[in-house]
Amino acid sequence: MVRRGLLALALALLCSAHAARAATFLYLRGEPGDSFDVFAEPYRWLDESNASIEVYQPFSGAYVFRFVHTGSGETWSMSWTTNFGGAFTPGVYENPYYLQAAVNGIVCSVSGSHVVVHDAAIENDTVQSAAIDFELHCAGGTQGGLFGSLRYRTGDLGCEGAEDGTACDDRDECTSAASCQAGRCTPSAARPLCAPDTICTVEAPCDPANGICHGSPAAPWGESCDDGNACTLGGHCEGANACVGQPIDCDDQSPCTTDSCDALTGCVHTPLAEQCWAIASRSIARLKASGTVRGQHVRCSGTCASGSLQVLLIDGDHYRIPSGTTQCLDGQPFDGADETGTLVPARHGRTTFALDNLDELAADLLFCTSARLKSILRTMSMQPGGASFTGIERVRTKLPEVIPTRLTITSTFNGAPYDVDEPPDFPPFPPGHRPPDCGGGIRIHCKVD
Image (cartoon, rainbow, N blue to C red):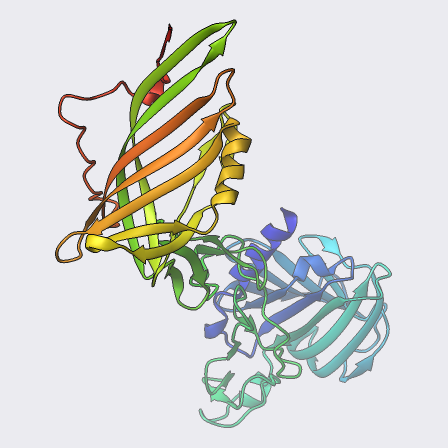
């Protein structure tokens, strides 16, 4: 949470850099690895447009450049004193105490420094102009550090009494030219910003010491972004280069397609077959058992009815009926094998379903119910125009009971092109014959001969 708050503050300090007057500013860049870098990470830019600036003498021989951000109140101070640094004159200084940095009263305990004074002018104990670049390492840090540039009325002394338009040097490598305007050394064009490197980064100030873009800071956590992935929505930043979006739902609710997503184009719905039909079946199950129990001949029978919707996929003369997820007798879910086979033309315009995997279907049925599948016979007839079909199916099984027991399921069905909103009508029951629903179990009646 601390890093996130500092990042938001840093971005706030950068927001007005476009309008900067380059003659007076403080640029700071914190590189990870130093105890003090976090206070300036990733960047700070303070100038006359977003900060109050004060230069004063706390005591003789000492000078403080104080920048207070007008929005956040964050205060940066750069201090120099003759007690440690020597003369305030142009040159290169490796003295760790030449320049001190502080933020909100917290001082960088300098353990190493590299300071370049380009220009310095002091008159009657008043700083007239200064241009300083620096690299500070705080509290024994050997990695990272605090890098920056201090400019105070840079080039203004040469503009005193000069005509507007007279060339001047603002000591900023990021501005192509500067000229005198009303006694101030002003860049000829707005100071440029470095464009974001990648997604979830933002603009950053150009380094005035060398004109280099050091890399864009991360955008605020949660800021909207576009990851360029058509398979996600609602992207938001979670650090530099980390645009996180929620996967979109590509399920078209159709069993006729496989659903996937392409990062460039979005949802892809691939047909499973050339034709996809919906089948509405009306089935009547008939149980018959006959055998001897304790010396008595017993006959049993029972009937029930049910309805079901299935999908028929046809590719040329091959077909597939997906099984979907069903339940075994013990209530456990079970994904059985799909029925596959070949469509064989028959007499009178009928088509016969020739199964390829009867043994596989039989094994599934035995696993779930202990019933043995004996045969599946199915035919269909296409209606004129080819927009629908009707058919008959008969399934024969043998049950593991005390006496020989057979369960035969006879179905009539209607088929139509699959449409989730308009499924085909269920075939009606035979006139005057409507067995009880199989949902309550099949009622078995037995008698002794």
